[in-house]
Image (cartoon, rainbow, N blue to C red; front, side, top):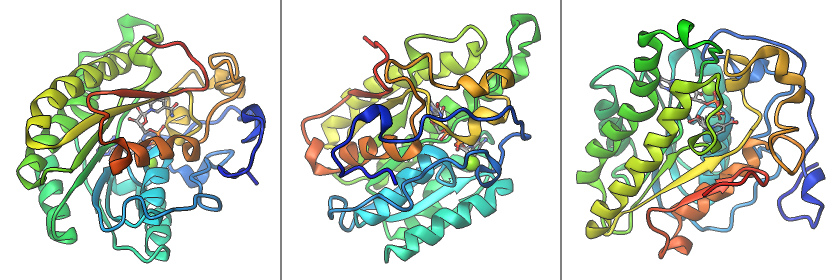
Length: 298
Ligand code: NAD
Ligand code: MG
């Protein structure tokens, strides 16, 4: 069993996976992915670093967002997660773990690419949690299109709506509720620096998220709100099997891109989000924390 507290060679801290070729319609169910991504259900140990915090986590049903939600609850935070309606069963799995940690866990399904929903979601989170002090934008879509001739303007726009516009709208709606000390964390990617040729729209959104976050960080620190970014590298999640990457490449997923020689698991990304939400990162503002198994970034 992988465990973040055991002294171990990081190359072997989690399994070196070779996922079989598989495909699900977007957004996909993590419970049906082979192997099922590790959200740290069996391993994450909290130490009270987010005691009493009130967090909204988008994409909290699965993958990185799901791992963050479980970690935050075990660190003492109450949590609202957002996800798409089709993902209710994955959301229920994460909500069970939040509640098992003795915290409030509320799920709010809805499509973040629809104008107006991000603000509704923030209002629901404030209502359910009695306030808000941690906003974590993890939701994102990634669709593999190898030839620019096949990349439609509709897809280009939808990817930007989901990955960039929604994060902007959520932060805009949340700011009036955020007291000094609150934290905002957005999710970029190694793709922000090394765009894959077959994910032009996706990679561009990740560059935009980085830039937007650094601008917001400068503006919002004047209110005592810190904005930071996590930029994961290849991480095993259902995103990969919902046309996220070339299906034929799945057996090699992560093994050649990252010097560590394997894909990461969501459980290995979540601690970065804990750090950036907690007071331990009080002097970290406008930073991008890469968690990518050794890929070179600026
Ligand atoms: P995931 O599929 O488990 O999570 C993505 C979530 O985004 C979905 O669960 C879904 O709830 C949400 N989402 C997508 N479109 C939405 C919409 N229109 N409305 C509401 N919610 C929507 O995959 P993941 O890999 O854990 O992805 C989480 C984040 O991490 C994404 O932003 C992704 O770009 C980023 N990321 C992932 C990797 C990786 O290798 N897995 C690497 C770098 C960055
Ligand atoms: Mg999901």
